[in-house]
Every structure is written in structure tokens, then in C-alpha cells.
Image: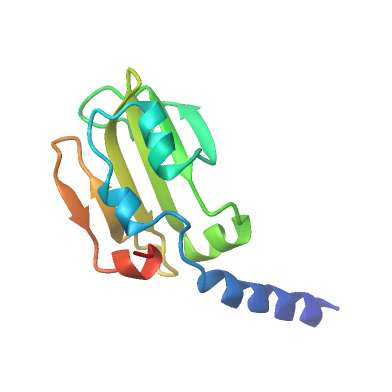
Length: 131
């Protein structure tokens, strides 16, 4: 019985790992600092979750809300470890970050729109976000 469960888990991990985010490279590149929350929803869709900011993820400037996006497939998100966050201050976009937690517990950046407006696309950006 345990072998069957393990085989099913491994099989589902293989399927999950092959999925890319439903959010596209084009959508991420369309994000701009200062966008309203409504504009972000128009561009990326509704977030998986919304949370009031806690001190452990505040940047240099005040952040009062953090949105989390995923592909609505919890197994895939856990396995591949892709995270995408949009952070807001007073209803305006102030930071976007996406990274992947790999099996060695490293967190390579996939995409970042930093509070100073700098955009960074990581080496694996195209692998995890379709054009």
C-alpha cells in the first residue's frame, strides 16, 4: 500500500513540475510601480490570496498589503516552489517578486520589479513563465 502511495506521489510530482505559470512574461513586463490594485487585477487576474502586511516582508518603504499568485494547483506549487508576490502601499503597487525554491533550498529570482523601478528577469524566467 505504501509503495502505491509513493508511486502516485512521484507521478503527480512529475506532472506538476512540467507546468508553467498561467501568468505570462508579457503580463509581468506590463507591471508598473504605482499601478492601482484594480489595474494589477486587470493585468494578472485575481490573486490566490491577499494578506495585510507583516513586518517580516516589508521593504524599505511601507507595505500594507501583499498578494500571492499561484497556478491554483497546490501540489504543483509546493513541488516546483514558484512564488509570485505583489506588494502594495496605500493601494498602489510598490514591489513584485517571483522566485523558485529548489530542492537544495536555494531561491533563484525569476522576476523582480524593485521599489526603485529596476526590473530583473532571472535565468529561469522563460522556463517558468510562458511568453
